[in-house]
Length: 240
Image 1 (spheres, rainbow, N blue to C red):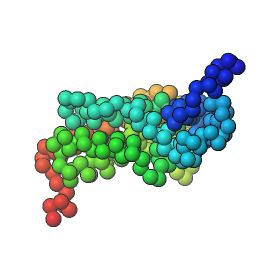
Image 2: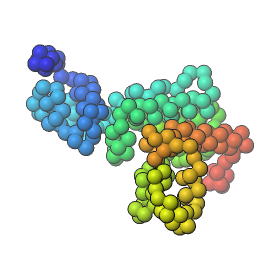
Image 3: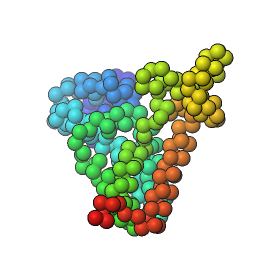
Image 4: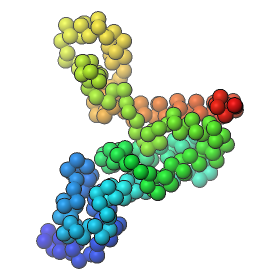
């Protein structure tokens, strides 16, 4: 181990090396406990050495996001726009699943970096290249929102409702009296929760197949965009 640390210290520090180490550290420790001091320890340098390559922690996070964006597959050449968009979104989802902290980092960026803007421009370009109008593409991007990065705010994102009173899913071991009480007060939630086949490894909700739910909604949106494009749809503002 001592030899590995010494060897690492002999490798010249660069922005690329700093960002790669930062991503690895965030993967291991999470973004909450991430710090410039800890990153410096991982690299075997003093904290001030990092500031030759990144001005501050915010610039470091921007660079880390840049690394994640670089992992997303480019548009598939020769593919129709609908399939190209679908594959791109799922690639983005895989990238963010490899780095659980990345979503939080993306959402915390107040300024769009060149890497993020490049991705957004390329993503928008897939619709325009497919023949969708600028007007329709504008609304398409609003509809997709964070889904273009492979994530979305799910209905069952937590085990409780916003007011903390309603479980998103009913545990199978719940007493019959509790089930009856919930069914009386929240009949529609209980009907939905009891109807679906569940996967215990889900992160969307207790038992929901989050990958299936994500792709289900994505396909609904893409089908809808395609239908509007075929119909020559325009917004009322564009017609004015």
